Length: 368
Image 1 (cartoon, rainbow, N blue to C red):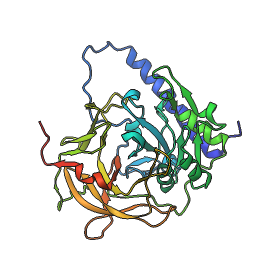
Image 2 (image 1 turned 45 degrees about the horizontal axis):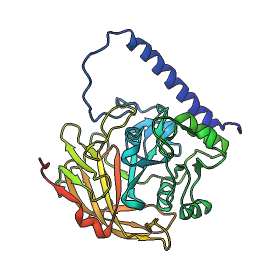
Image 3 (image 1 turned 135 degrees about the vertical axis):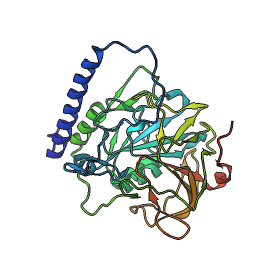
Image 4 (image 1 turned 90 degrees about the vertical axis):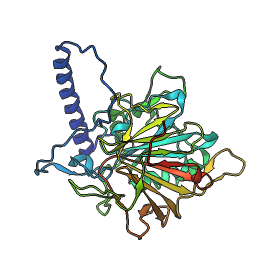
């Protein structure tokens, strides 16, 4: 393996410190009498909570969530990790630690997720990890992310070969240091990565983890102690998406101001913390699509413009989106042409095929 860069040594050192502290805490907890009652699933997040006392030394705003985090992670390129989303591979690992999650349709009526992380330091298992599709690689490049996948379609390989994004591939030489398999599921549903594996993989491929100096992020966020109430929007406490295989929907939780995620007729749970996936913002981006000739694979062009929805704080508004080039960033606007301001927290983005957009359901009340 090639030598670690200075930045990678810093990140690895922080990760080691977190693991040591966690071990000490665990040892202390194990000395206490065990509780007999099972804790209820809540909308908590696994990311370290930063108490905002006005002193932000060593902290910086996350470009993924708008929240204060360790400046090492805020100033480093994120990881965009392809994650399977079929019933056979449930539950997934690490989704609640992601800042942004994309859900897009792929072949056979299923969806696949791409979870984008600026801090994976507490994660010893992430995934499972599946293969690349071309539109995911383009999206990862918008965040200057290191794209993590296990294999690729022919069309995905063409995009990867263009050099638009740095990647860690389970079919590459970095496989043995980046990925591992478990006996939890049969192949190909059992490949995972970890914080240690991601650091080792980027070192192996000599990937620079520094964000470009001119990169200012993908979104605009509300200021601290501020909330975009979407006062012009309609009430929206329930969102159901058309995706045929997993039948996903979100239910608004008034207490946490988040949308709880369900699919396959049950709560979507992150195995790492045992909590239900809960997001602050939902963006639905309506897109064109077609099938690559002679294949089963979807083509979803991302350059251009279209319509969509922004959902947060129990409200929904109509939006438009635009992306000027393959290397450009997608921007979202309200009906007055102003770029939307996201509430601080995790964002879920779903690409919605135009012919099915009217099959999505938005309701001010949760169906009984």
